[in-house]
Length: 326
Image: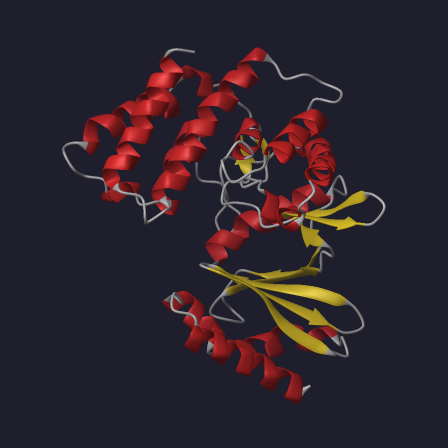
């Protein structure tokens, strides 16, 4: 076991030294990865054979542990994991294809970071599946899964605190808070940006169509990289992973997420086909998807540090002008 942990730490040190964009949060975890993993897996008695770094994201590190069973350890800020825990526990009621929590601790009592263990989801991400037909077949299963998920009520809006308290009061305030916490929108303070952003908030976020929506369980970041499948003679959905910050809100937010440019046409088509297999979308739902697709487009531009502010503002203006003509 000591040799396995030593090899894990060596991999973490190599990653820290060789990757140019390692942020302070990642570095703090990677520097102590051996100790943190040892504390987390000690009670499990897994007879560990291998431990590997599976994913290193800006605010999330995933570790795969193989032994008598295979589990995934997730290290992330407790504020982020709180929503994921609520999402996974709600989906468990309907035995939906999402990870099953083995243990979660977002109290900071054990480690100075939140962590969660869940069963390892096998297979490959749909983003790594090249065949469009297989992408579409996988997406249909995701669409059917979302339809069931979106029938599960939540106790509040947006995401809970680590104490599982829901502090937001409506869907529009959730979207505003999400923008402020996940993008660079607060830095757009120029005289040119102010009226354009005001128009965006008023025409999209504050629109009356965003009212009178009951919060349901949503994934909050549906994309091809977050859907895992196995491919044999057919495609089998294994799990939908890594929910976004928003896990309680308008179900059309999930469908709008699939309209992003990084998503293939086959995957988009499959999602809608699966979602509407038994019940069609209502006109008001279609309208909300269009508005929320703009929300996603602007969100993704805001988190892309390489996008020039003038290009960003022009994109917002174009999107709003297009909305006015539909």
